[in-house]
Image 1 (cartoon, rainbow, N blue to C red):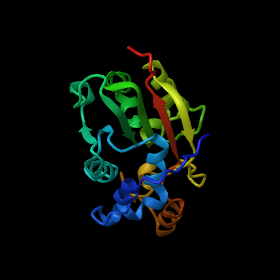
Image 2: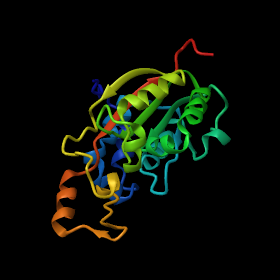
Image 3: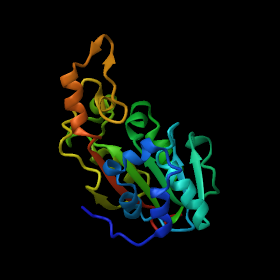
Length: 229
């Protein structure tokens, strides 16, 4: 497992610390480690970064977009990769995927999406992944409905698409997360689902789930081979 070598990227530090980020976003930094995670992924000034399905809250976007603007880079949000990656083939420096593989594994999107990422990245480009992590050895079809997938499944899928696994980090690991929650990963922060299908959490159950914090997550860095076509 690799921990990031922290560099003095003043622009990234400023983007993370900026009060223009929503207060709720900044409150999660202690559990999501944005500066350390982006450093581990290899973010640098001037890169073209494509984020897949940034979501309505735009947690990573609220850092990546102003960082790109401040450093002469480019931030490209993409919601439907197979319809277009927003960049010319072979020109992206980094593709960021956060908390999405559990959805893609359920409807067959993982393979075509990974192919699109590979095509968009330049040789040597990085596929950066953050994902809720299931217990190893379980079937992804059984775990994905709860929001978790095995790390080995993500690695295998990315390798099949042509990527090389360059590094894995325990930066976003959470040993308190046993993955056994009434409403899957959405029982935990930040979603904190407390009622569904006639089931309502007791105050003690809610407090116990809040004490866990956010999910246990894999943090992976893949690279498109330099010799790739």
